[in-house]
Picture 1 (cartoon, one colour):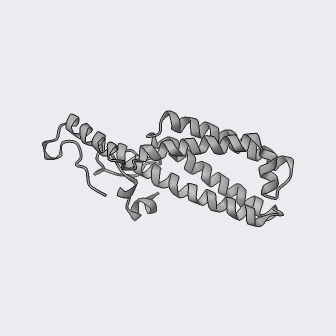
Picture 2: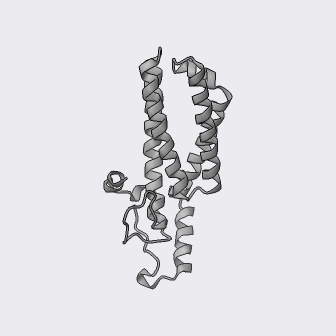
Picture 3: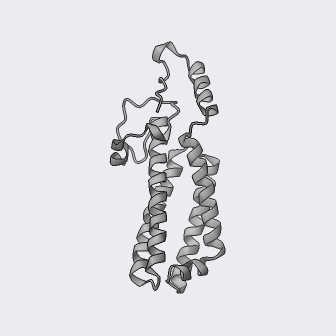
Length: 179
């Protein structure tokens, strides 16, 4: 992606830099903040589905018991909370890191379900969806960390510019490995 100078570089004032960020937003670039907002809406939709039909989802996964229904319901409530936090603060990396943690919990639960399911193909499909969400969440969380100069969990990033409009295309393979 195109590099945007950090504040203070080339004599740019904060106001000029903020203006440049606004211009890049208008150009249609996909920013980590926009992806964070999209992840928030995705969490709300998934949470509503899980809360509205926990029994159906458990049956679809081939684990038809009370514990599975309660687990799906609890995961739905977690998704609603995560989505609400992201809609309220789409550029707060901690909100996206919470989704990353949720993805790990989901993967573990699906791993357990896979050993007991009468529909292993459906569990595998759900696992693939969780893996895709995990990658999107992880890349977005790392991009937001780079934007703010902070990382959760904390990694040393002494040269990261603060107040920079980081695009997902700015991420390097090392960012994924560091996470």
